[in-house]
Image 1: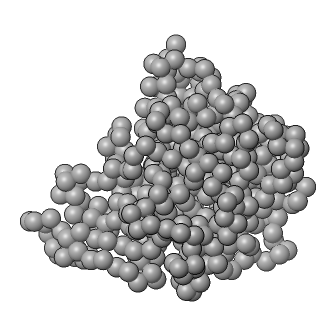
Image 2: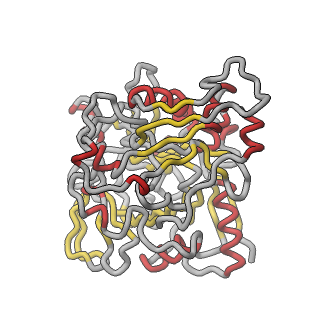
Length: 410
């Protein structure tokens, strides 16, 4: 039986015209039990639509690992290295992840305390909150009614290991609660109504497609160099209120204070990554971890009028690098371009109708090389949220724009 695909329900805030090729619910198949032919359909659908939802499935850590691995059969370790997130307590990822002992590629994430779970006698989970990372914060009295994007990112170590192709996220426990107002707090007045504990997604393809000509040219010619051990490097720094990068205050750890690192393990990636099925270009930059920007010259015969860095450039000033990337990425996180996934059954009218109908067995697969995503939400200490997350360091690095792409957009 062929799999069935249905569009994901969009919130009223979304510009539906920008989501025609984003997100599908998959029906008529269990994600833990599929034939090779059925998997090919799932794989093609993921790269075509960037996010897939399986509703109300029982799903073991072993099945989650097997499904994730199917997208890259020679991959093996968790995207940050098995158990590596717990080895360095200075990493900003350290408090967020607990490894499932018998399946170390699967992580337990969420909020509150979980007992006797998959070999973990007790797991104290900490939902990332912007107060621990952002330079400015929402007033304490608004803490449970308002929220922010915590950190827009790609799931990737960005040092030594290749970025995972796919992330799988399985809801085990979802707390009840009213919707929250997400504040951008960047002077635009932008706000977004979101379900409690949503995971927010934006399309990297849309991020590229809406750029003006001169920034498209820069995107197809550009590469970003990431800091070594970036999650340790950025740990003393503060994020911007939008979660889309770091404030340039000079607070990053000096390179000599990082864990031992090797120059050849530092990652330099193209700004745009090529979709293996559609051929589309996705703007895929982790803004918090970038250190340098490298721009190739315009190809021979290209129109130089209005072009940025027509002769190429290697920009090492960190604030300048961040400002350029922010200018390119910020339009794509506008409220109408954000998909905030509702972990409740069938969605809710304005996110709160029929809120007792919870679905604690949603499984979402997302194309980690095609979207950016962010944790969202603020919980009280007694609200338990538990998810299993799996992604695997890929067997190869992403592929950037082709010569034809550069000729077309430069």
